Structure formats: C-alpha cells, structure tokens
Amino acid sequence: MKKINTGGLKVLLVDFETAPNRAWVWGKYEQDVIDYDKETYILSFSYKWLGEKRVYGMGLCDYAKFKKDPEDDFDLVKDVYKIWCQADIIIAHNGDDFDIKVANAAFIRNGFTPPNPVKTIDTKKIAKSKFKFNSNKLDDLGNRLGLGRKVETGGFKLWKGCMEGNKSAWKKMIRYNKNDVILLEKVYLKIRPWATNHPNMNIMADHNSCSSCNSKNIEQRGWTYTAVSRRKKFVCKDCGKWSSGRVEKLENINLR
Image 1 (spheres, rainbow, N blue to C red):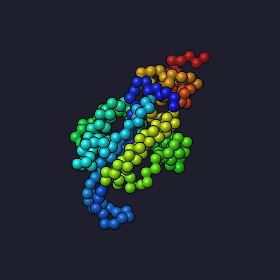
Image 2: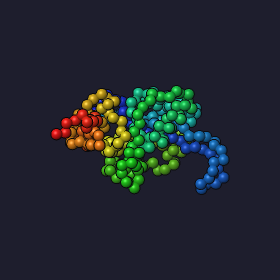
Image 3: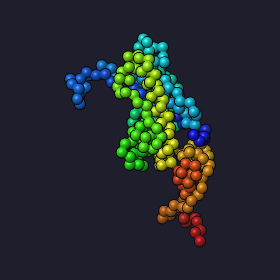
Image 4: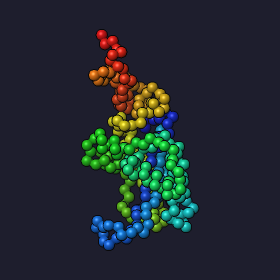
C-alpha cells in the first residue's frame, strides 16, 4: 500500500463488537420485550491509525476482571477512552449511527466525561450518498470493490461462546474484529475521493494540498462560475479528488 500522508493529523479507524441484550419475551418471532435481564455491553474493540501498519484488538477476556465478572467492561472502556481522546478524526462504517454512539454510551455509563471532540467519517454514509450498490454493508462493499471480505463468524454461536468464556471463540472474535478494521481502511481509501463532506485535510493540517488525501500533487483544471464569482478547479493526481480554490468576485476581475 502506498504511504498515506495524514499531514500530522491522528486519524483513527475503529470497530466495536457488542454483546446482545438479554431479555424476557413471550415468544420468538417479532416480540416486544417484557423486561431486560441484561443490557448490551462492549465485547471487543479494534483500531488502527491511518498511515500505520499495526492493527490493535482488545477484548474483555484480556482483562483481569473477566474471570470474576465477564460482563464488566469498565477497564476496556477506559482504554478505549484514552485512545479516542488522541484522535483528530475517527472513521467507522455506520459509525455515526452505531460505533460513535456505542462509545459515547459506554463512556457515560462508566462515569467518563465527553471525550476530545473529533471529526467523524462514516463510510456507509459516503457509499449511500454517492453510489447505487445493492448493499452498503462493509462486507458487500469490500466484495463488490474487490477489496476483500469479512471473516466468517458462524453466526450467533461465536458471540455466545465469547460470553461463556470460550478461548477459541475469543481468538476468532478478535481476529474478526481486527479484520473489519483492515477492510474498513481499504473501503475508506477507495471511496474517499468521492466524499463531498470529508474533513478538509489541508485546512486542518495547514498545508496547500489535496483536501482529501493531503497530497501536494494537485493540478488546476479550469474554473467553476456563478453569476457573480468564479473559483479554480483542482484535481488530485494521486487520489482523483476534485476541489475548488478561493472565491473570486467577478466585479474585481478583468476577464478580457
């Protein structure tokens, strides 16, 4: 993979796996919950810093409290909080509706204050807004774009095995979780030039470069006009992202 220039920004790719809610119900199909016996908690967390090779994975089984209370995620959440607060940008698939909110819920119920404010990038939202794929799931996008697939889990029994303390289940869960982050990065880099709401990397990093990948290999290609102004159009010759320059009022320009 080509070296990724983040302009000194700390860009974090993340993925959570959570335990299911345990509840009382009258039947099996489309049931209303009578009461919760145990609400969801974090099972594992994987992450990677954009531009670095190593992928990290941590699960409840890695902590001393697990043998005594396999549902106590405080120590795991504490480590997630420390990592979270180091980031300038956080990337996740369906992150705005799931991962970011899962993290925030875990932080507040474990007694933590709001973490360092960050920009977020949701690859699922980019895919939904820019393309017409049959599915915007991470696995399907990875497959359709020729980037790889998620690890097969075998279904709910993997989650159940982890909650029961099965070592082989935990090993597979961490591998599954880490592979999701690897696939997330590949999908992100592939669709990044298409994103219109991507954080402007050159403004944030204070560089005159591509707003998406921070490359300085940009070229002016024409202008965009309104009734009263114009802007230079630029294209990144590395990632293909188009961007615009500063607004120039036509009343101040000699067009002859």
